[in-house]
Length: 416
Image 1: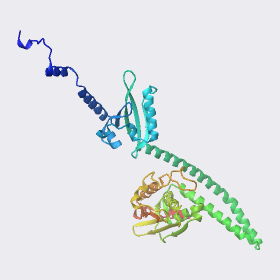
Image 2: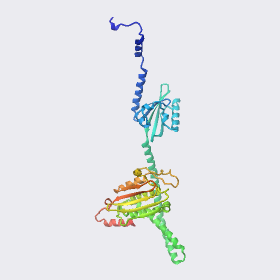
Image 3: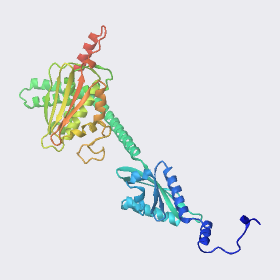
Image 4: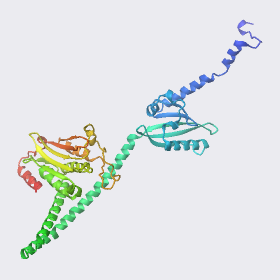
């Protein structure tokens, strides 16, 4: 028999026996390491932040996305628990979830949402069971829902703003109709008061009544004029001095604006006309003035200054206040949609200003349609000023053959 086929009938002993036995037994430690690497490779293949934990919540492993989200490295997670990254309320929910998994009452994934490290995170916990239905562990994925949540909040704000605009539009139409219907009876009252005073000049109360009636006529005229201009969708030649005076006069209906604020108006003479939509400019200036009024709600001195001026290139409208002011480094954020230093509509205390964060952003968009810009200056606690800059060359009356008379008529109508 050849030597290489010979069989030693005596059993192996000593070192040789241990070597042969170790070859026959599986290397448990190597298998565990191999299994751990397979688990980690699986976690890394998940596009979301992912964590694998034991049945008691102890973390086994996590991927790179979870390292970034939780702010710790993989080797630092050893021995830590899923409970270590949450507050009491979330811990209670996760603990109840583990109890439901362990008891078999729940076998489907559970979703928990919460704020984590400044981000809004949706956590999805998926249980892992063995063949006998015993809970072996949980895989948790973390999806950053911050942008989606912000988008949902913006949509809700837009819907709220749209509803508010529709309400205001309906109220405006009703007020315009009411003002039109009041004009007739009021004209009769004024006429008969004049007649009565001519016959009974000794009645000293009549001039006072007449003055109040004339004031009512002025208010009604202002309301009707604003309604007509705001509904006009045709570009016309505009005198921004007159437009500002109309809008400021309309704001006298706001008792805070009328009675609590010192007003300083400086309108430059000979201001060049601007060709555009009345409603565009009225919306811009009303936004700026209303923001100035809101900024002064807690100011000990409430002074609003509105001024106009021009040079060879531009026309300037400045709205300044003595309110809470602003940080120059934060000024650009004011024009970001949905950014507001005021609480949302419906969440403000009674008598306190609120906002949707859309006023200044829409004002900038409107001004930019005319090639203009809005400049901001201010300091915390000392007020702020917003200056609308409109380039003259881009917004002059368009040259149209035989159209000069038409545009003069439009100008006369606008100034009326």
